[in-house]
Amino acid sequence: MEKIENNSQGILALTNRIRMEAKGLKDIGLPLDTFPQKLQDIIFEVARIEQFDLEYLTLSMLSAAATAIGNSFHIRIRGSWKSCPALYVILIGRPGQGKTPPLDYAFRPLQEHDFLLVSKFIEENKRYAELNAGNKGNAIDSDKPVLVQTILSDLTQEAMMRIHNDNQRGIVILVDEIMGFFNSIYRYNDSPLLTQLLTAYSGKPLKVSRCNNPVPIIIPHPCINIIGTTQTQRIGELFTKENVSSGLIDRILFLHPKNRDIPKMEENPDAGAQGNGRAECVYLKWKAIIDKLLSLEPDYDEKGIIIPKVLDMSKDAYRCFAQWKNALIEKANSVEDERLIDSRMMKADSNVARLALVFQLLGWACDEIHMQYIDVHSVQAAIRMYDYLELSYQSVRSHIQKETMPPLKKAFLDLVQTDFTTADAIQAGAEIGICESTVKKDLARMCEERILQKTRHGAYKKLL
Image (cartoon, rainbow, N blue to C red):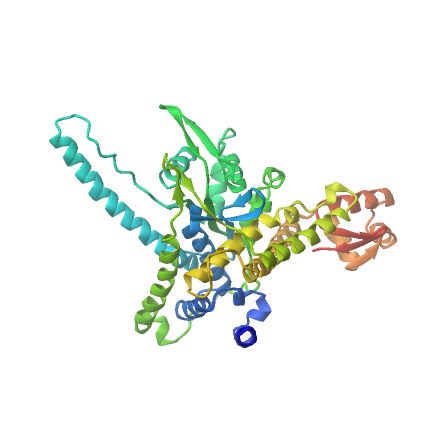
């Protein structure tokens, strides 16, 4: 039986590899084969009919799935360390590159879910008002209806807390131009919203006092997803000293597609009215997956506080996760100067664990795997997806550094090879009028800025 199963997995892997090569996925590096087969089919079909960018669509769907799961399930990373599936995601691209349409598509089932909850609230509020009117001002036993919403686009800190308090399962901040959202955070120097988002990501309880109410809002298990788009020329605004030092940048998954061409409109019937029936059929398949994730029920205590169910990793999954993490730790331990340790690398385990939880439950929602625990395939999928997104992050960071780099530093880097020595650097500096002592100081500074990597004593490698 095991041989048959392994053979089936081998055939499936071969099929996926052929399909990825045919679709050009090998060139862009997108590990689409990490997704359940059913969802792969949906993604390919949606991208074909709607003419969406595969990379934007894939990550948008991951974010939507994480939002749908919310606080229903957490993953145990180690001991008492557990995490919800919340992801902070930014889609980056040129104007007109098609960032927003796949994002809207992925979250359409959740938008429709919110609309249904609004209709339900209106009806319940109407009945509540009628009961109050018939009771001649006396208090009635039934609770006042509460509007439960998942998607937020324009919010203040107190509004976010209030809405999350009403929806303990979790919320998503979905903003088309996300730099406007982040810039609004810094509009007031005393705004604690950034602190709240960092606290929420770490899984610690949120608390905010209200001026008109002596009872503070407390969220014991915050689950806040963030996803939005921005243009390539604006992403540098996010990389402020405060955002880097606070760890916000380290927690965000950036997608900057390798294929940055603005897609042309295909001249085929599926793209027009004739393809509408097929498009709706495929959408309903995606909606069914999200609806199944929304059907996952958490537990509640006697006070009505949500208690997320917890999935442990299997022994093989934990071993895989630990080996991957230990490789990062060994890399960090090999760095003598602690200023040169990559803080983003050391925070990667949280995002990988969250992705593993999402992959496991997506597989269950597609009727392909169980949800009794996190298996090794989900952990491997999460690691591959994170590695792919890290290459995208490196692309973003490289773009920002090149845009902001002083001309003299650019000239220096142009003169040295990809791998060079201190002697090479001193010679290059002399050619453009930089003295030896300044060159040595600049080498250390560029290592801190991750423009260079010190490979051994007196040897460096360009990272841009």
